[in-house]
Length: 429
Image (cartoon, rainbow, N blue to C red; front, side):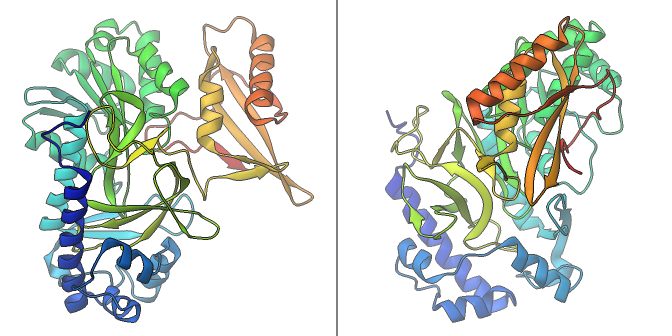
């Protein structure tokens, strides 16, 4: 049932069109990147509908943004204001190519803080909560915004940058923190360290864990492992990108779907091969137009995220916005094809995390005769007393889930790296 306090789908679309018209007028006047593209597409502030905009405006790719920054270093031409007005610098990780530099004004940054505020509200975080940010602050955009949104929400914010896992657990314990923000990988790692060091009070007092930066929070097996390590906590997933900012959060009443924060975006889903639009119920690539970030916007941006758009008009929590069932299924630039089977990291993570006894893992990719092959390296945890049985279980699960025979090799404890930010478990040899 729709929550009467939430806007209807019609109201959301009305707001999106109004914001789009305002944004287009602004870009046509002052943005050197977008003005010629809008002119060539025949799109101006009088655009009659969202459908007309989607028909006329070409899709944007990351490669185009990279090329613009290479031709116009260091920040490119996607700047709606004079560069002197920009106060925030962010950078993509560069894991799939050349990093992008991204600038924000106070105005565009505040708009994204507002979206992160929606993430916090969706997670049930409120004034007076004590939030530990267990990561090192660098040019990665995500948790900078989360930190400022939590401050604005009236939370006590505890920066964990530069601390060891042990020191972070002491910080959680001594401060009485009840909310943890980190990547899914680090939530598992910190929970493992807490179990090894018998830091029971820290484990018990965390009630909410907000994860982002990589798949995991919407993978049921990964979420279950995190919640087993933090027995009183609920995991809330969050997804975003440097280019679009924070975008989604876990539905409060259904852990297996993400809610897109509308009307901050105009979202679409397209077939990644034909680029034809797909309606609710379709599975394809998420395309976003940022309506709230006018100082450095993207229009019809191909995120590379594969999603399943729910056919439900209203979510279980009563909201009418776009819902992504199963979260981010995978990224097109992360997928590899092995013997004709498309394999996403999130699928592998779900298989491995669903198998007891694994402390950490790595996927080695080798190319033979023009074909990719996978080998799974696993590091057993202290509870694993039969590594041969664990290997057999993993191999069997790969065959069942992916119809692939994947070699599984056990490595010694402490062999594989541990990660605080985005894990780099997939290694191409």
